[in-house]
Image (cartoon, rainbow, N blue to C red; front, side, top):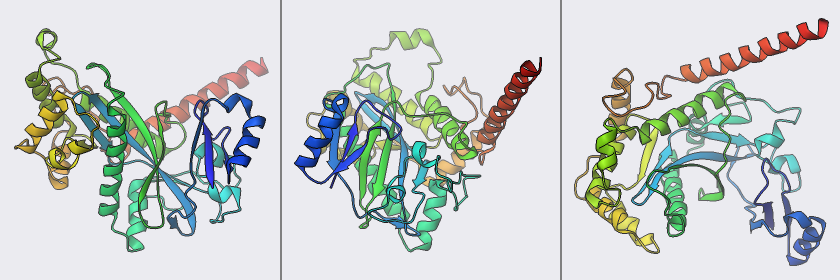
Length: 348
């Protein structure tokens, strides 16, 4: 079975499945506007199920630069569940798209990061349930990060980009029944709206603030302007500063790591000079914090001076959801105010 997605569409629009080339040709005749921009991929018919329900993950990936390549994965994310028990013939059992599922009568939105009963959950909630079923989540997430990196490396030769640009990507990932992570698609125009739920507000606020803090702003604009973007040594120096900022956020550095020179550089079709030099620098002794050190560092850095360390925003989204909750409450309050204004105008 094959799943076909229009590359210019979104929110589940225009998606269909087919079993052979004849079915595909028939569908294309009926969908002429999608004929020249269709992504066709093999359908994963045996996904990993949780409580006999299909799910997939929205993973937030930050690519700060392609030359030298610097890539991070946010530690939290969204888990989207189907609204029916899994069945190969039932439509609502196959779909995990939030835009479609939220219209179902039994759809339940998340109320917190630890909610295990909703159709949209956090990574933290998912990991707790998978561990109850005996799965090694640390191993699963490590394999997922490797697959995400391989996906970015595959784009590298054709997406060198500009030194002053970055990209936040939304990878949709599904684990199959053998616990192998599969990339379903990569979203460039991903939704960062905070109003859908407290869960969305908490996680997405952390993603946005964390991404800005990783990227940072130069303390001395004159000195920054004098830096040579083509200089390998300047690239390495600025990258090391960036790594230090990233360690205070929820973004985990995936490339380069101390193992990248041996494990990841050979995967490049053609590795550029700066990427290779940075990988060598990290492999020969650049400091890396383990998860316990990262947590301690994040706790101690919540209230530091943002200017002195090149950070943009003090709140990094690691306050147990408080910032996301306040944002969500403000959005709800503003909606109530606008509704009251509309009612008063109608009465007049």
